[in-house]
Length: 357
Length: 274
Ligand SMILES: Cc1ncc(C[n+]2csc(CCOP(=O)(O)OP(=O)(O)O)c2C)c(N)n1
Ligand code: SF4
Ligand SMILES: [Mg+2]
Image (cartoon, rainbow over all chains, first blue to last red; front, side):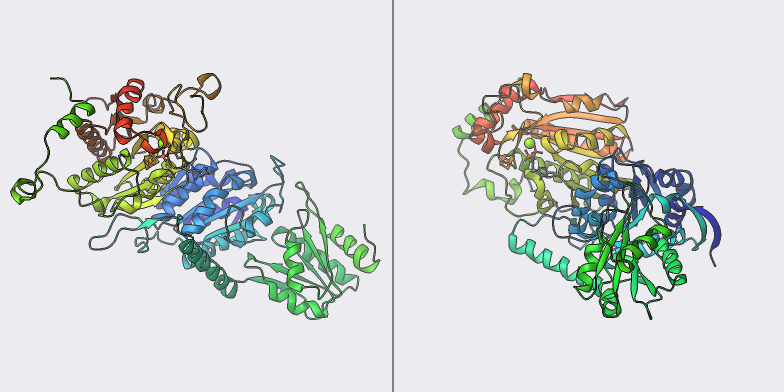
């Protein structure tokens, strides 16, 4: 059994990083996730010898990640929206060179410098590529402090399994709030590294080089096809989601991360009023749990998608049901969090009273 | 005795034709072997380009130090983007300008290994200035081989941060006007001021004598890395015959007559007591 602790989301994530045997963290301070670098600077190297380095920018941090990941190490960085934007070039290179690594985006409201309050406005950037070229991150969306811990371990495993960058897409509220968590036991750091890693040429073997450059179009297309095949494989094997009360549901509330918890509360309130509502929460937002929406759609009168943005995941929900049921959206932006009452009110406005705005 | 210039050597070579049929092929007359760590493939560099010589001396040093299995290189974006096709050591290809950050990531988790970057002037001193300065300032224990050809070679001849005043490039078609286009950046001198920097030395590869000195400097830098002295940079002032629109010979003359007076060769900073 692991330890039971009361922890802030960001600190729980940092603790999980140390316990997962992470080899190196490179990051740059930004609210609302600066606790990560602070916690690691305090705790990590004394406990596991993990490298913790404050980079001069997020651009540098993600390229340090590239270097250390290229040497086959378990590496992680964290940031919040503006910083993640700066990492997009590096992420594209990492995805192309197929280097495993883990990052967390503790999302804040944008665009621009925006606000330090929680948001989900980086959904498109996270699940649709973000940088240049056709690539995907594996994206995990925790909705509790416990999942901030669990997804660090899962994230490292998925990254290494598929040689792909993995993102924990969370937000300022989960990063900052305190909850009870069960921490897994300390894992040893790796002592053996993959045979593709650049750790110094091995005697009698060809050198290793890490690159994303393939000047011949035929070769670059081949690389692209391989990447796409890998993403298909990930879609086949790694979809994770949570459903509540779908059996008799006539309506579904759906949302990811923090909003999913609020949707569950709103669903309970709706049920108390006699509305048959269920909830779908994608846990992986790439790969997106398309089938669960498609399967339930025929029994529904409608879906209410709720997000802390102007409507991003709702596009994937609409694609999933492909017209089989109505999909409406309710969102708050700029750091505002929707309340369960608000969700219920908007559900009634749209689906019961049939009003549009 | 004064140093022989490139022009002198050219003259001597044409005066004394080599006898290919006889002595040059005899085993006992071998005076030079290609470095084993340089992969035996045709290089994509233009004829006369300094990149190939710089690659060669770097790999000669790796050979001579016997560290092929203990060194990891980082290639830049620039004409030398394919350095990993020529250097038979583990390598990573960095995004444009980010080599020093990538090298930091590698070195920090494997401090016992040798790590070098190989970067052009645009890569190192324009888009990657921040990564270069901060790696230097942290005293990252790495070697940076800095190829200063005063131009963006790979993208066909645009102005670089190191382009000489008045020098014509495709984006300074009337000659670099320092009033509007800024001054050439003495990045090596700038870095030498930082306490984390152990060794900065400027060289060229346009004559055999200079090649030898440049090679010695690279060897020194790797020796300092072994001793953990900190950030070392060897700048190589060199040519880009294609984009300078010169023959190789003219370009080497330009290196000697124009580049070197502007970027004087020699040590800029040496570790204390060395
Ligand atoms: C982000 C980004 N911007 C621009 C480029 C285009 N680019 C490729 S190489 C290069 C300049 C290289 O010049 P330098 O570093 O001096 O190397 P050289 O080719 O002269 O050896 C540029 C601007 C790029 N690849 N990536
Ligand atoms: S373009 Fe210039 S720097 Fe590039 S290979 Fe040709 S001569 Fe060398
Ligand atoms: Mg150049």
